[in-house]
Image (tube, rainbow, N blue to C red; front, side, top):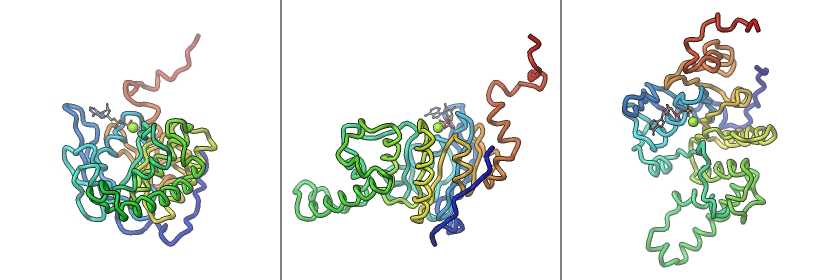
Length: 284
Ligand SMILES: Nc1ncnc2c1ncn2[C@@H]1O[C@H](COP(=O)(O)OP(=O)(O)O)[C@@H](O)[C@H]1O
Ligand SMILES: [Mg+2]
């Protein structure tokens, strides 16, 4: 694998040794007889980028779903800034955790700007009555929301897409739009599920730069990805999940040189019974 050349940290926020922000303790998620996530522990500090890798079906997305309240873990706890969060997506977002999805979930018939504005509504204070009456407070908040949403579009490199419908954006731009919408909720921690899936090398590089810039604003990032070069260049720490369990955790250097990680990717599932004899060259 390639030599690791991580971008140096360049702000006071990004020591990576800040306070603990997110803490998952012994998270277990079972579906009937299937254990998708088994006693997973993860701690994420302020200004840290943590990577989650592992073969397909390892439980990475399920773990994100447990962190973000989409699933209520069978057992275990998730704490953000020391507080246990109720497993309800809205409450999780308000508490300061935002995410993107492996399968993009945008409002296709809304503009890019409107998609980002949706994210900010969890922080606006207009009550139902103000919204219905559309009084001065509503209009002021609406204006502020637009300005903030446009700033976020600029931040992710989509400043030119304001009035374009989300469904008409190229795939890579849709992924960036999801990131902008997540940032609009003003999170302390951002969880990205396969943010570079379907991207070309140039877009992948841009995604790396974007994640570093998010980190440099003082946020923590947890990222699931299959692209090892991307993960090892980006992350301060990497967890490798296999069959729902953390197999290896360490720095990118430690994880990428661990033979168990390589084996997890090459010899998974049915191939587990594979023995060395099977590797002999076919005489034909
Ligand atoms: N809602 C669900 N009901 C039943 N099984 C599920 C559900 N969600 C995920 N799983 C199972 O959990 C396992 C882990 O899946 P997933 O978290 O999507 O893996 P990954 O994201 O690492 O590829 C898989 O076997 C998957 O089929
Ligand atoms: Mg997944």
